[in-house]
Length: 194
Image 1 (tube, helix red, strand yellow):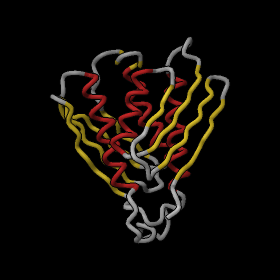
Image 2 (cartoon, rainbow, N blue to C red):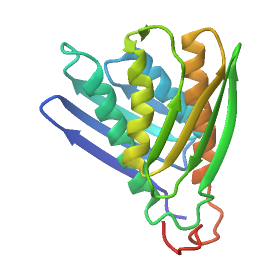
Image 3 (cartoon, helix red, strand yellow):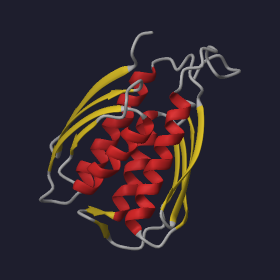
Image 4 (spheres, rainbow, N blue to C red):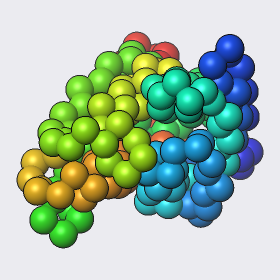
């Protein structure tokens, strides 16, 4: 079987991003966005999704973290879309719960080709580590839009914002791992195309 991989670069006046994604990997992550907490979340996505992921982002962090987080997520979503190709032979759907101590998150994925995201992390702090809390939700949303997938993420319990965010990214990873799995059954749609 041919490996499902894609490399994407995204250069703007605000960021310079390079992403390489392998869908049939072992969970190896080499991520450097300039935002250590976002790096930690992307490493969770790779590890628990069994994705091989390399990310480099040089962004205007002197302004704030918005452009770096958003453009990294857009490049990652684009890489997912390209690696999936015509999406034939994939499971398409995935769902998972992931706990982290007192936190519990649920994620549901449909690799439908129709972008939509509902992300409810319920974070209370303004920042988690060096990353604005709002950018964690926005990164998942941007990933779904560029990846042309439907994504629902809800944190169902938890008091610690680090735990809530990490449980959410782990749940997305587990759901994504199910959805990208090869099942060899052709295009998983009555339309015949995704």
